[in-house]
Length: 416
Image 1 (cartoon, rainbow, N blue to C red):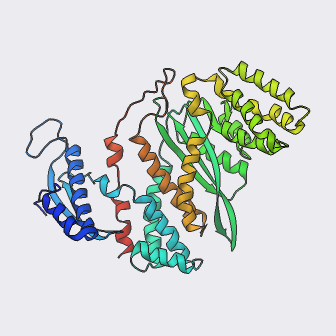
Image 2: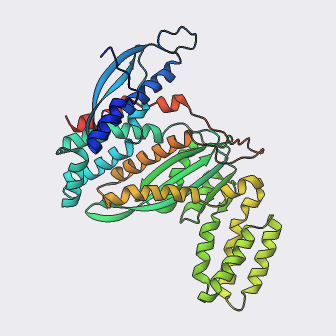
Image 3: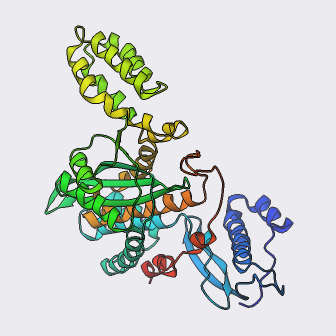
């Protein structure tokens, strides 16, 4: 395909949508995405057609038709080509990786005999065709290679590291067990957010955390000034063993929630919550510690268990006061990771029980990889002079264009 028509949203497209309504949407999608891919190639080449410039990175080489199965049906797109190679439009790939991982997870359940009629119906609806065990295995292997490369990519300097754990149901030796899903994110000295890593395992808590944190260091993570997390079982010992004397900030949000278990009467809840908020919102650590001592004495008689719990736990949420004021709001809780977990739950609840650990890791890795890429084009997470964090926007062309053709062949292999 050497010639390409003009893909501007012309009056003929508008007329078609007016006449055909929803039936005209696939054509509109085709036209718009073709336009976007054309613009992406132009940006990649850094030169217009026939333009002579030292910045040119290659030469346009026509278009290649590609039929993609979508929820709107089969749509044939015109994929822009570059004579020198190395270019594939990210517009066609964006947002598809986690859907493919979900498809594999559902297909595995069906093929391995642990599915339901509902799972079978969802799988056939997503794929449009019956799926054999060989097709699933082949597609999963290729997707796993891409995801493993992402999980093992080199890391660099990280100022703040967030860690959290959640659990997913996984079938193991005929039993359904809880697999721990460990996720770590970080903020670089430039204020960029990154998903640092993910691990899924049925192993004991401390060993799993220790192995996970060590893998982050082995990949080059360095310069960590603060670890932010909840008081997860096994994390404390693993953190001290791997990260040494790096300070720890216990999530203030979870501390506030945990306090509720020690409040003896419902009528005291608002008062206790206000006292704890006053500590966390104090202007400095010294004031927060004064508020804490006042609260300990205040509840010593009316709520002795609460008073003892406050004395033992609340100071673990004060580490944030040792860091720049402009950073504190961002590093005093793990709320950013909670939002990620919410997105993960949205995907995993469709599966319910994963057939194995690998299937669980595949789906979660795929979504985290997409989130990490979305962060690369977003604004900096925190601002402040201490860590040179600037609130700027920017797009990394190399990162956006690094979309391997292997993963794009996923549906093609399923349909072979």
